[in-house]
Amino acid sequence: MSKPSIYGLTLAQLTDWLQERGHKKGRAAQVWDYLYRRRVTAYTEMTELNPACAELLAEQFTIQTLTEHVKQQSADGTVKFLFRLTDGNLIETVMMRHKFGLSVCVTTQVGCNIGCSFCASGLLAKSRDLSGGEIVEQIMKVQLHLDSAGAGERVSNIVVMGIGEPFDNYANMSDFIRVVTDHKGLAIGPRHITVSTSGLAKKIVEFADDTDLPVNLAVSLHAPNDELRTRIMKINKAIPIEKLMQAIDYYLEKTKRRITLEYILLKDVNDKKEHALELAELVGARKQLATVNLIPYNPVDEHSQYQRSEQESIRIFYDTLKKQGINCSVRLEHGADIDAACGQLRSKQLRSGDNDAATEHGAALA
Image (cartoon, rainbow, N blue to C red; front, top):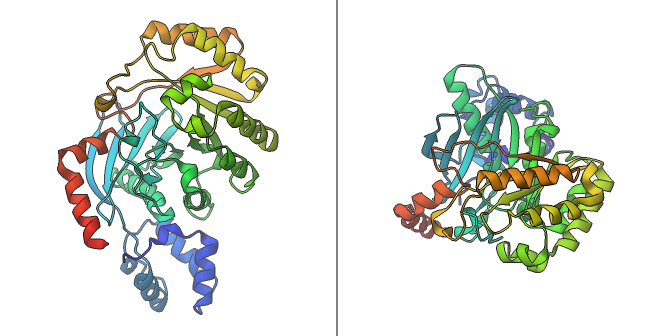
């Protein structure tokens, strides 16, 4: 079996692991400095580290588990990476340029079991969760890409909105957040991180209770009623809107933090004025702590029944929400000239034959 990634260890976990093996407490902080500040990619580059410690770590942990398979760069500065994992599977990571800084969208699973009918990410069922280290390494790969350009730029924001359901991989997702927010490492502020869920109510409650994870929460709503939401998101059969909103109310009461309700606009499906009015009523008393983020749809070949809403429909939907006193915005699009939809690049590569390679590789490891 492959060695686990050292990026998967929080500073506290690495400290305990080294101390249990006779190394001084300060060794872990030294290793972290090499990994996240100096950003070395080999233990041999940790020249000031105790040789015995470096040798032990090299025996037990790998630093690199992702290899760049495809990289697409958009005219707007967006960069989409397709990484190959050690078992041959492919995942996507996206870097986006905003006025407020550089944001990276990370993937948490290989495939997705949520099965939203409009989404490219769920075209293949989940085969496994990513480890915490594999999630952290996505950020490190993007940061190394920036370092190589020599402009002194750094990743400042993270959205956990890539392939997979983050709350279905809760423990590894949580460790990822603890690693990237640690002030001795990448030191990305918790308020600069957003985790998106399709609506796993019990995990939303758990997330609210995790006081050491004070990051932002976004919920993929996409419909204002159960009939419509069940039609486009099969998760609504198990967790209907009433149950989801109860979890959201608990989160708002417990954390006092704002929440984002994501709403992808599908032409003639959920983009009518009456849908906007129904959505405004649903948000209702929560509107002081809730923002609706309207998302123009990126068409996916395999989901040809869905099309992007017309600009006029988007405008009317937005204006209707605003008139009802709902905080809302329309998401700026990034990477429109490349495979823009989440999971689209991976899906295209698998259709072109990489699926066979990944399957053969996985079978060889089994």
